[in-house]
Length: 347
Image (tube, rainbow, N blue to C red; front, side):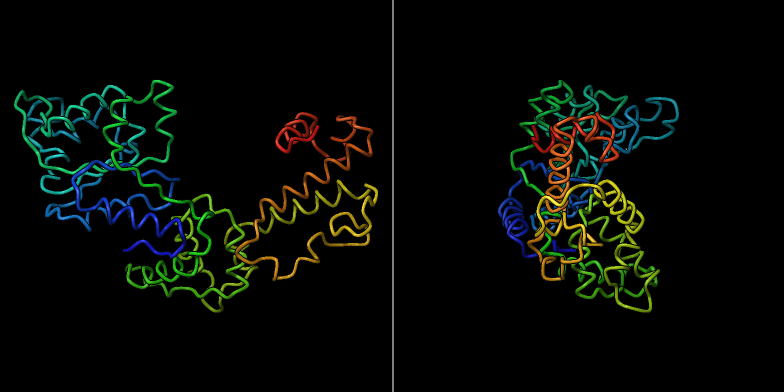
């Protein structure tokens, strides 16, 4: 599968992949969980001239006591349970690419051995003293800040420099919302051919606007799961805004949060009679927000932050800057209100 999208961030990523692919240099792919780092690694391998396979290893999924044998292989009898000789993942990747996913979770004691393999291009199986030369290309990925782990002494600085000759940054889904139509099309094409028997869902404009407003903490992986769930639960009609909220389990949270806002502000004075947020005649805080405000440039998170800031400032004014009284009026703990004041730089 190719990387879908035409946003600036994705276009730059594709250019960087094409530039780096032909050369046997180490690459580090960084980005949030679920953003598609393994797909980037696969594109790097596919667009290279490597004739071997791409071998993937998730460093966070294999117990640390078994990871060395998994990577380097072992001889018969090297440890309890080693009934036969087994070649490791580095040897399996001969002539191709080895992809070490979640390299940031690799145990510190194993990092020095990885560094030596990178430098010598040879591995030594567990239980053997003989080194085997291997022609491989190394690609690593992590969702963590490797520089911070180096500062904390949890990752070798020399290894960080060796694996990051080329650094490819994968954007989060919320930073490439203009790619939603392309991504939905590509993921629905996958659903057609993945053997699940599902019929891909369709999304109308209203549903797309609602999807764009979601933060998607699980990124593309979450979007794919959402579309699969929609294919099961919304077979009879296109996905609209209400269906998006239901499928993302947002209905209850949105209603309870809105009710809490109404309760907390019911006695606040109308400081700005023209304000859509503070007009007591209004029965719905969003009644003036038509579809036009939910275009691709609309930021729901910033919108709600602005509302919260206005409510906190107003409550403090009503209570003569008494934090405890303002917290009670907003139905918040005092410590919570203080944290929010710091967050929004309210003095």
